[in-house]
Image 1 (cartoon, helix red, strand yellow):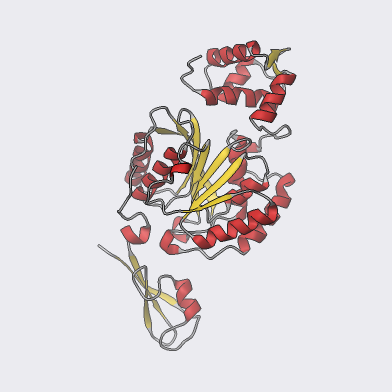
Image 2 (tube, one colour; image 1 turned 120 degrees about the vertical axis):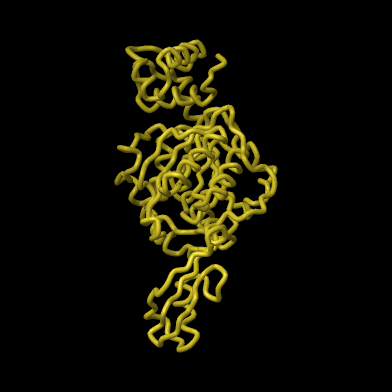
Length: 364
């Protein structure tokens, strides 16, 4: 058919008919966000192929149902959650597991801009991907995952494959342990994304999700590697967690997204909640990005610049101990975080509590 919308449009049509059981052409077009003539044309071609029939609306034939469930891996009893954000009661057992696993994951490393998302957020993300038709029967890539979204996706037990790429070996060890215990089959790859993506990961995935460092170079790098990892660049879907920034910086964010041949299909404010990240109000937005046929990475080779906040905007905080000692905390100091200071204790009196923030200095 030489569809401008690509293969993914056909998948969306099949998925919507499968989800509803029976659907009229106008409703089908509205749900898949396709022009009505395009949705109708796809439906007619599917009828010719014996996958769809019309009985007061489009329905799947037995052959179509076998194809959708057996080949495409779609879930027969899945129903969309209201607003694609809530966690339905049916998933409470998964949420309880995530709470347990999250409580035992490695501590966040601020040098890597890590701030753990809540278990509820991890599951909402996985359900959001599932609702969009981008998890069931799909090979999904998670670029960085201290939030354990890959585990949430795995516990839904619908994905064809799940891979995590991360620089933090502690985290990958934890995810591997969970995966082995639960039989999730998650593949973990220890890799610094400042280096080119390993060859075996290029063109291997249907979708990706990333919660990158909250800097423009970090955003560009992680999205670039994600684009390189996609099997189909034409109307594939990517997911991005990113905070609200000042207007000119957000203009730069959207400019980078658009320059790479992506566009924002949906943006949900305050979707992601974090344990920590107080400077961001403990929350970021979720971007659903559509990958066009013009998609290209900004960065293809090794990247030698800074991507983390501490590298680009280093901040030193001075804490006062009750004994009067002033202690500098920052990425280049003896104590990199206040949590580390509390763990090791005041260098003067040894106490591990009672520290007060006295001063914040940002490098020029």
